Length: 129
Image (cartoon, rainbow, N blue to C red; front, side, top):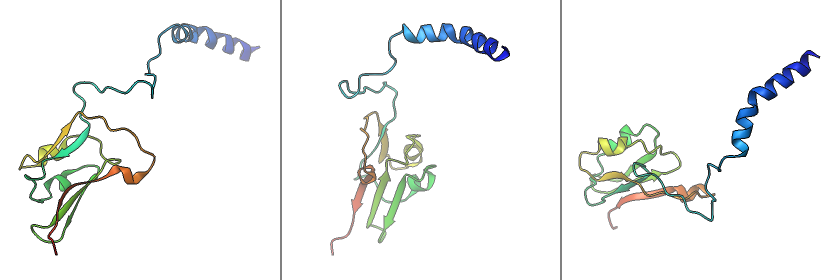
């Protein structure tokens, strides 16, 4: 009897929430029929101006999620790799760059099922041998 009273009490407690959920519009979009439009202040994708990048590694050093990797062969020969699946779009790389080469824009990147699609070479300044 006590369990039945608790059940009835909890039902009436949640009844307003249940009714609101039943009679309100859905909060989600009809994906994939409708594409996602991020809000104006959305910081999404890491972009780079490769001509400005000198391979100093400040962005790599300050990235809290280790989403950037710098592979150096020599002082002028390097590759900057971005792991999008690790990136939190915090903007720390943009703040750390002294040469204004890295920035975040509001481009929304679609999801992928393969991890290789999330690895992107941002700068590839290698010596021709």
